[in-house]
Length: 309
Figure (cartoon, rainbow, N blue to C red):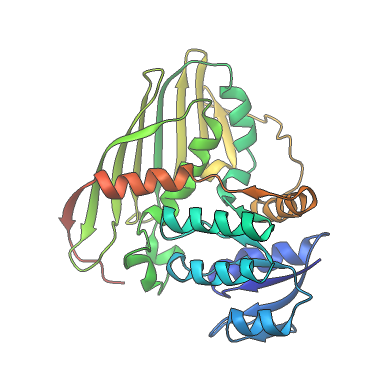
């Protein structure tokens, strides 16, 4: 099936284009971008030009930053196209619910993707935790913004989410692997004096079983990058390492089998999109975004040193 990719930036070039090229379900037929392009693929200056010229392309994958994403997604849905959304699915929850309503009205599929849920050992972690009593869970998600988001000023503007842009990846894993829903109780947000969004955040959550659940996000990490989730249970400790790529049980590396043999986060997302198209409907789990919105609403803001790239 032909697919169009909207927003040809770093994540599109690094992840989406290779995943589509390797897919047995999709072929990249067009792109939309102000500056980027994919060699050999037809390009359009905006989504409206694409929708007018290429009625044959029925699936749209959106990689735009969160703030301009709603307009493009809504235009595609109104034109009867199926839409796949890079994370987060919108700049606000209201936008996400509006897109769901539009998709229902126009009878098209809508998929809010969470690529970190497709890391190799996330499914194994979910299965291991399913029948155990959780005592504590600690997220440590620290990376260097200069390495992973060079020149991306939008991430520091309202709607850009700051450190929650990677932090939401951790929250997407937590909401996937825990058997029980949690909700935020408090947050501290460290905001550079010259920016609008947090560069670091510390979160605390309520767990219905009384477990202590917390998260520590930081965009200032130099050297080794840290993307870990540690869950202590009544039957041992599980640690997801490297964003879910590796798993340890009681300190020992474990080779728990993943029930999804397809390799790579983004190839798995595109396979899921193909499956969603076959059965129809909407897949929009908004729990990770709810936690971020709650943190931005409840968080106590602390001003920190300016961020200069």
